[in-house]
Image (cartoon, rainbow, N blue to C red; front, top):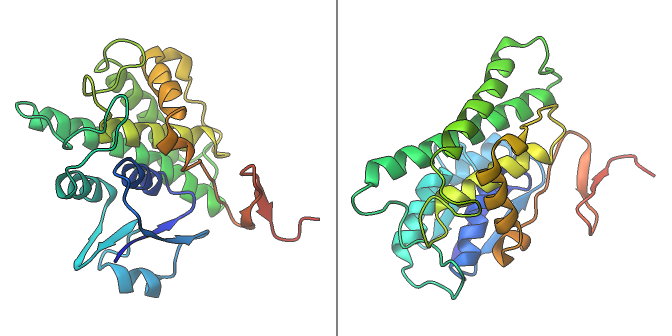
Length: 231
């Protein structure tokens, strides 16, 4: 039995779901619109984190670790152009590729920190920690832009990497949430071209971007949030 416990708006969970679809793996979607309670999370993982993957006897949290497990556990690849990478790291550049993924995930952590603080009523303006988080987003994008090749190409030539998947998930998360953060994506044309190409990929379209904040109770067919008490 394979299942994934996750929250609707999580960009980390979106990345994992895209990988599961790229591998054509069936799984039980244990989706929570809002963050599961501490008791629910504790029953799934000692770190109280989601997404949490259960694959038979294997239980994993932390999206990068889940991605690494899925790519190594399931070597078969569906026909796609470009195909999903064989692994999270390439032979001969393991540490560079690990650094790429760690940097991409740092971007995601900074973005979700801003989002979570806004849920609790802390605005970006006037909060030094959140302002540093927003500055971090720009610095990370600039660093990643320099490591991409031709416009539209990903981090691994001829393959769709987990680095590509999580970068797209995190950037689109920022762009589709009311965070008062303008990424200025026009300054990063290689990243913008990569994301535009990935937006058209079936696995990305099958896992659309959702955002949540207090009062959202569900979603219309077009993805528009439904709010409690709205007529």
